[in-house]
Length: 308
Length: 189
Image 1 (cartoon, rainbow over the protein chains, first blue to last red):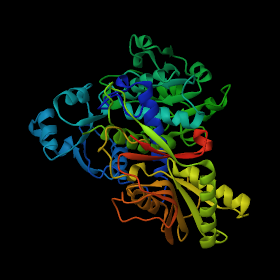
Image 2: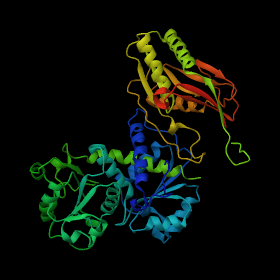
Image 3: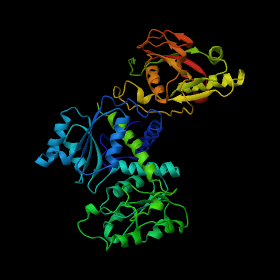
Image 4: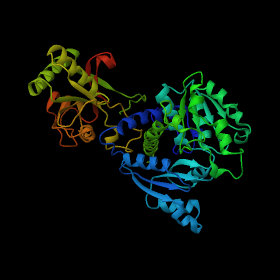
C-alpha cells in the first residue's frame, strides 16, 4: 500500500484508515523537512496549484500556500472578493478558466456544502477541499489527529470530546469521521441548540455538561463560536456561553486528570477558552498549526503523484 | 521480463560476492576511508536511504571496533523528494527517514550507497545534502559500481567492486541485519 485510494481530497468520509496512515507517515517526513536549515524540496516543480477561496481564511490559506511553496509547486491565488465571480461567472466557468492556464490542482474553500464534490465531477484537476460550508474540512481533521498522535502516541482508543458549535462546524464533522475511522471514542458537548439532531447516528456520544465531558476525555477540541454563520441567537449571551462551555484554568486544574487542549483557530480568547489555558503546557494549539503545513504537504504530494 | 511458453516468468540469479568476499571488501573500504580521513574529526558519513544505511552502519562498526576510531558522525539521508522521476512511474514514491543530527557546514561528507547505477540517486543526494548546509567537500563510496550504465557524469571515490552488468540485469545486495545473510546477487530478469 503506497498510494491513496482517492484522486481528490473532498472529505474524510471518502478516505480509508490506510489512507490516513499513509498521509501521517508522509507528513512525518515532511515535518523533518520543514525543520531543516533549508525547508524546501524540489519535488513538485512541474506542478501548478490554484488556491481558490470563496470565503475568508487566514490560517488555512497561508498553510496551504506555504505547503505548496515548500514543495516547489507554482502557486496562484484567487479570492472571490476581487474576481469575476462578482460579475456573475459560474463556479465551473471560473475554475475552467483557471485550469486553461495549465493548472494541475485546485485547493478550494467555498461556503456551499458539496462544492468540492460538484467541482471534482466537472473539471479535470485534482481537488482539495479546504472547507465547504458546514460540511467538511478534511485537512484540519487530519492535522488534528496527527497532533493527537504526536502528543499521545496514537489515536486509536483515545477519548476525544469536541466542544462548542457542532451544528455549524465542518471541523467537527471531519474530526468525527477521522477519529472514528482511527478507532477513537468521540463525544460532542455543547448547548442543545448547537448540537445537530441525530448526531448520535454518527456513533458519537452526546454530553451537555462540560465538566463531565472533560473528566471523561483525554483530549478536548474546543471549537470557535461561528457568529458569522448564525442567523439568530443559539444561546442567550456570549458571557453565559463562556460560563457554561468555556474552559478556564480553574476548571482545567479541578479535573481528575491532565487532558490535552486543542483549538482549530482562530481563538475567541475568553469565550471558548481563556488565555491562560490557550497558552498552557496542556495546549497543543501551536503544534496544530505547525503540523498543518506538514499534513498539507503530504496530502498535496500524495495527490500530485497520482496526476498523470 | 521474458515469459516461458507456460506463462511463468523466468529469472535466474548468480552469486556475485559471498559473505567472505563482502567482508574483505568492507575492510578494504574502511582502510581507504581511514587513510584519507585519519581521525574522522571533520568527517561525516551519510548513508543514502533506503539501502545505503546498512553499508554505512557496517563501515562505521568496523572503523570503531577494529580501528578504534571514536565518535564517528553517521547519518542517513532520504532523497525521495529530490528525485527526478516524480510522476514518471506508476507508483507513488515512498519516503524514508532522514536523520542528520550534526552540522554539515564545512565538513567533509562521504555519501555511502550500496550500488551505483545511473547516478541519478547520487545527483538527488548531492542536492538534498545542501538543505543541511555547505559541506567542505563531498565524496562518494559505493560497494558495487555498475560500469557503462551511467546517465550522469558521476564516479565514486571509493568502490568495492566494479561490475559489468547489462540493463536487464539487476544487482541486489543483501545484508545480514536486514535480509538474514550477506550476499550480492546478479539477477537476470
